[in-house]
Length: 257
Image 1 (tube, rainbow, N blue to C red):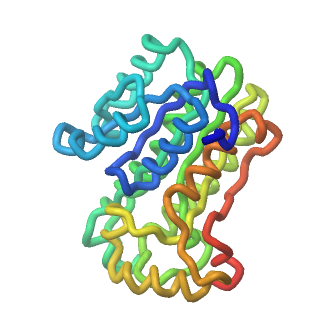
Image 2: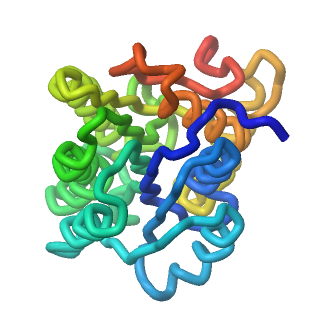
């Protein structure tokens, strides 16, 4: 199979693989198909067994534990990038979290602690990764994160993650502007609803999937491979003049949402 774009020689770090059905796994498959050198993280020993099939499938060079809530974990991870590779060409941030009570309740009722934790894991961690990646991207690079259209309009039951994803998108634009002089680009990919383990934490997610299919002009949902195809293009040299975007990959659902 011919690669979509040429990523041979590019070193990419993937943060957020949950299992073979996750968005990050779909991106990893596309990166690997295009020839990239890859590394990935896993949350903890329990999660490692779910991540291993993906890392083996895509021939990743190394893996490491990383929990952004643990002080020092991110710094240790990027120390490994420096020691093993000496640099970095692209990074995918595909993690999000909110406490269940805050996620399933009204935004009006969310706790300060829950809001802060959701922002830290889902948004501020991307800024931290960008800061740590910047000195490693000596020849330029690309930073990707994953968002959702609940950032810009109210989506039933998306609740707290709506404001959090809005902050993530804004942070991406500022990163793109601030890091552009160093040749570093930043994008937020906005997939339509996909049945992943992470998404299952959203209340009544099945109804959200049905509505998305009904709104899409072709009546079809997207798959993780669709997200991966876009991600591979964005980190490639073919997209070197594109930065600071929030790009939907939702089969046109955003036209009617």
